[in-house]
Each structure stands twice: as structure tokens, then as C-alpha cells.
Image 1 (cartoon, rainbow, N blue to C red):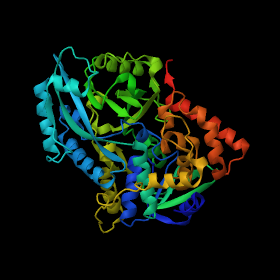
Image 2 (image 1 turned 135 degrees about the vertical axis):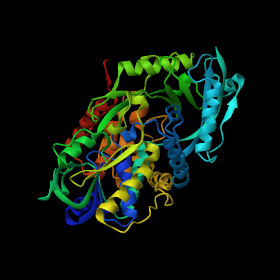
Image 3 (image 1 turned 90 degrees about the vertical axis):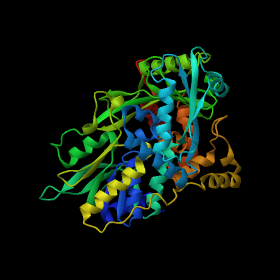
Length: 511
């Protein structure tokens, strides 16, 4: 992989078959697929890879058991297939996860209905799930999760899905695209889309946020994979374009795992409103989520609200009465905006389809909206099929289902750095598994350019500390400043910028 400066110069030096705008999971997946098919590919992301919705999910690769209730059977079938694929091509990023689902008297989903649903769930996975579901007695449920409320418990079930690090899965796709000779640049914002005299998009003017330089990238086809920002990018090519995306806000919180006492992953029906929600193990923490509500908030600025946090706390306290969690126990709270395709909207966000939509705009721009983390690879393959058709190219079969994702050697490489320099082996925060070597590797090998890249996505320190990593921002700036060419003033500016970014992402509205 060449230097970032080389990549920025390459944006202006070549005419690409496809320019992908947006470095979330969908855009990174599209760039990887296109490059593996031999298309001259460029990927630009105005912030960092996965810095939006793609790093603020439930961190699950799941078949969508809750979508059965709304009869989204095709999506469940597709998601189950994609879960198997990701377990195969990225075992270092995607791992099986067993869930316990307790059933209580008078629950909206009684035991018989849950059993029938999980039977269908296994069938839609073609009986090739990690393992088949099992019905559990009340005693067996409490044996697995003794912290659950025992009153009214009638039984339950276990079933399997998978967990991931969403930010690293996104990064792995971006790195894979670069390894397949795509030009990949983060912190590069599209300011304008050029058009010819017929109104067809011909390329984009891109501003490098690191240096301030602007370059023009030309491409035969542009893919708009910016998720909740899709409408803004569409309007760059056509100011009259109507809205095509509805935002749905999902909020998660992280609390000390010891307070909740969950032994594994638990699927619950909230005692507040009966919604399906998850209690998920995450090292020293437990992640609780998610909410779902329509939002008009800017996807860059969306945050959890005090009401969101209160809802999640009330829901988990009802399920785990010994937890007695209060607002002060919340280590982190974050929100993401799911980009639901407007044509697939239902009367409320929870019932809206997670199907994706691919549209060839009058300008020639290919816009993809909707979908979910689990199905990104299949969605990306369809987008590249559409690109090939727009190019008039001979179709080439996707290879992304058989080519492993990179990153399996990362742990060994970081260990080698730490072994070679004892100072790099020092932990950043006591009790968390991050060392200075993680930072150096992030800058040298993973295109990290800012403190937010390092503290929010190359590590998850921001999600695992009550101050969102602010206390280590200066030491981190000192470690990586030498690699990034920061003088004392630049380091101070980086720390100040991180404090603003941490407040933007992790602040809680209404407190």
C-alpha cells in the first residue's frame, strides 16, 4: 500500500471506471468487489471509514430473527446466507454468538410462537446455522442467565447468530479494496459532481481534509454509497432530486458487565413497549440496544437523548432486577442513523423493510440505500453488477464470497511491534487491551489520520471509557504525532478536535 499522498495524487491522475463515494460498510464493500472484478476503482470518504452508522451498530451479524414477525422472509434468508459467508471469509472478525431468549407469562411473543419462529429461522438458514435452536425450561433459562427476573418466567429458547467489530469489518473491506489496486482515501470530501453537456456525471471535485488541497477525480460511473447522507450527494448531481432516504435513529448504551450480570447474549422484549432488544457481552461491558425512532437529525450530529437512555435502562432493569442501573452507570451512549429506503417505508421505522434499493439516477449516478450490516456483501455485489451494466462491460462474477478479508495477521503484527520496542507494549488504559503498538500499527498500516480514527475505530477506547477517551487523547497525540508530522501546536489542535468529536458522538441530549 502506497502513501496517502500518492493515493490523493492518483485520484487526479487516472480516469476510473467507478468512483465510490462513501466509506461505510456498503461503499467499502462496493469498492472491494469492483476492484476484485478488475474495474479501475476509487473510494473516497469525507471522514473515516465506518465513522457514521457503520461503527454505531449492535455489532451483530445476524439473520434478523426479529424481522420474521414482519414477514421479511427474503431478508432473513439472505442474511442467514451472508452470515455463513462472513463466518467463513472473516473468522478473525465474525464469531458465533449464542443467544438466550426468555419467555414470560403474557408476553407478546409466547413460547409456542417463539418456537415456531426459531424453527422457521433455522429453516431459512437451510439448517446450516451455527447450531439449531433449542427450547429451554424456565430452570434451564435461569441456569444460563441467573440474573434474569424469575417471576413469571415460563421457559425460553437458545439460538445462534454472530458478533463482529463493525468498525474493523468496514476497515477490512477498505483495506481489501486497496490491496486489489483500488485508490482508497479517507478524510476526502466530495464538494461537487461534474456533469457533461447532457447532464451526465463525469467525476467529482474532492477536497483533502488533511492538507486542504483539492483534486478532480474523473470516472465513467459514480456510486453514491453514503447511507443517510445519500440525498445530499444526489443533490450535488441533481439539485432537483427528491428525497429518497428516511432516517431511523438507533441508540445503544454500554454499562459495566458486572452490574448486569449477563453471562452471554440475551434477546428481550422490553417491559416498556414490547420491542425486541438485545443485551450483549462486550468484554468488561454490556451493550444494551437498540431504540428505533424516525429522525430528521443530521446523521453527522445525531446523539442519544436522555429519554433514549432512560428507556434502555428501564428495559434492562426490568429484565435483570439485580442490576439497578442508573444514569451514572452508563459508560457510553451513542446513536446511529439507519438509512431506510423511502420507497420501502411503513408507518413506523420499526416495521420498515431493511431491503436495499439500487437506483440509476438521471445523471447516471448509481445510488444505493437501505440494507443492513449483515447483508452488505450481497448488496455490494448487486451494485457492481449495475455498474458493469452501465459501463456496457462483459459481466464478471463476484469473488467476494470466496476471497478472505484481510486482518487475520494483525494481532501478530501488533505483538511484534510491542516486542521490538518495550515502550510500545505499554497499555494505554489499565484494564483495557490496547497498547501503544495498536496506535503505531493503526497509523502505519490502517490509514488512521486523526485521534478519532484511533480512539473510536482502530481501538474502541471511546466506547469503553466514561470520558470517551478524552483523558488519553494527549498521550495518544504524543505517540502518533511523530508519525503524522505533528508539532506541538498540531498536537494541541488534534486533542481539541478530538474533544469536540467525542462530545458530538457521545454527548447525551437533554442532560
